[in-house]
Length: 240
Image 1 (spheres, rainbow, N blue to C red):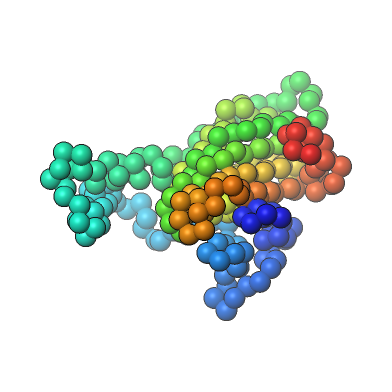
Image 2 (cartoon, rainbow, N blue to C red):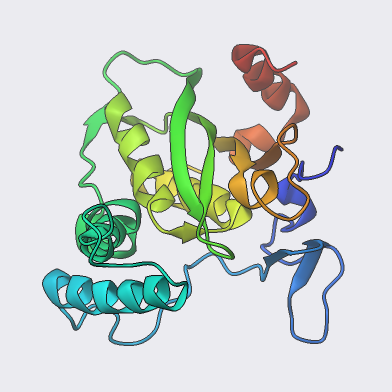
């Protein structure tokens, strides 16, 4: 594998247990500054939603103003005056809105009245997320497949599930597992495949500054644990 190309199978085995090198703090080291602790739930503090969105935005704006001032920027300048409030609104209402369970999409299931029993594949779902280590973008594509267990969901709901879990500070392995877990819960089937292929701006714009590599993570369960089924899935993606 090239640098930054990691299968989540090397992180979590079929029982959800860690594979790889674990340090004394319980963190799995994949590379220099890439750490995934193997927990699928996003780490949140108790009472995370006690404050209203407006209260959060006011407090974040104050903190952003402090950071910009410490950096020496003049917040009386026309271009910078509203930046703290713009950043705060972006965090709460947009790029991190997936932290709030109230924003989770309501997914309605339908009977598989067509009797379609093969895999359904949705390719190239747009991914916009943020690395939780440096709060810079993760940009890429998500490929999803499932085999109906008697029910189906609208295609746009798959996109909305991906979007919801992407809109929070993320680690790509966790994002992959969260999408898969939600699809299995909604569809009531274990026959789910998720592949995420993304570029991390923490690699592109800082540190090693490598703009050529990408990170690939995957989750295969149920029928997709079979090699032939996975090969069919990859053929649908034109990745193999």
